[in-house]
Length: 229
Length: 339
Image 1 (cartoon, each protein chain N blue to C red):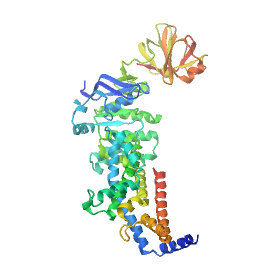
Image 2 (cartoon, chains in turn green, yellow; image 1 turned 135 degrees about the vertical axis):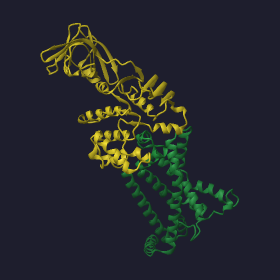
Image 3 (tube, rainbow over the protein chains, first blue to last red; image 1 turned 120 degrees about the vertical axis):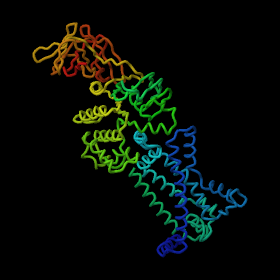
Image 4 (cartoon, rainbow over the protein chains, first blue to last red; image 1 turned 90 degrees about the horizontal axis):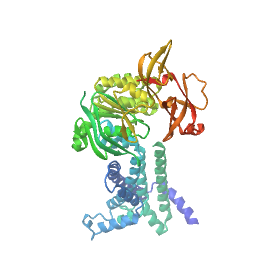
């Protein structure tokens, strides 16, 4: 039991002392996940608007597909991305495997269906009169999207926050295509996995505390946004 | 005779699992006010939304300003659509102030703020909402929201204005104001198509009445349409029917042949004579009972004259009305409208 107490004690001294390696790991996690969420948002939100506002054949199937992909396991994304990025794979020439960029791509793929799905339900939940009001006053599709976006802005932000929360805490993709390389692709989750394996609890616990704190902040934000919409 | 602004031809639109709006031929001419009347679910809103190009028909053609609107390029349709405006029965107001809302259509059209301010003032004052201009739209009452939305629909100077129940939610004190405003639009050459379930309002406001029932157009015949002789006796006026029955009438005194109608919802039925201020009370016998949704249409015979009263299902059950029942019909003199 003593090792746990020891670990927690050392963890706090790492956090308070802003241990250099710990800070680097946290920053990499933040950088990769923020970038991945941003890319996913830029693609997801317009797609969600297009699906919600247009009528086309296969719309229901597409929505079901997106909802299914929302629970895509990270190891499956890791596996697919690995096979594409490995030297023998079709994208092997890019030399992206075991770089932070590979992690960004993988996390963006993970976040994409989540943000699309949540945005879609936010947009579909918007008052149908918004569309009628905009069209009746001479506006086009873009104006309709802006009108709904403004109305549902908190729900859309919540969708993005949910996407970030998911990618920030994932471990499978980062491990498989990032490779957990020290000072390069080691992020919070892969570091915790490694340190635990080594029996070195201090850094693991310190990172775990930070991860939990981040999750807490995101959830707090989500609750706040939920109250707003 | 004005030119055709909007026309429906062989039109079909399914608007509920059970009903479809079917219109073979309907032409709206420029510069007139049309009232679409009919009970709830008769297809009034669907007709207006079709005219506003908010929903496409399932079959048939819509001609707007002479163009077969769903067979012209989308760009042209968007351009023509900018000449029409629509008021929702329960309008949606955007976030922001009343000003932001009213000028929305102008902003889309790229108008400068200075010009907007010039345009907005007379409309707001005509509708009695000038003091609200800087208020947040979401803080308004339902009636205020309706007037703000009306201002928003009108400020873009449409040639065709479609109003879904424009008086619903508007407080009594302002109905006259809004009616006057709508009549003023006609004088400016705007074609107005409005829906209402208030028949007397339809008469007051419109040049033509379009009657809908279960999605079909009908020739418009008001209930309780009666012809008789106007008789003045001192301060009182009556309509003497050929059968001898006399109906008290209020309002402008007229003699000679008169055509009147009585709104069937204003005729009260009771088992015993009512002790009330209403001047008309007759004993009748129930001859027909027709169920209409949550209401029941009761047709009664009063010494050879047919009267129709519409009551709720609940009252129908409470009164225990059957064919052949004897009932008292009571209505105020002011419920009688001279046509």
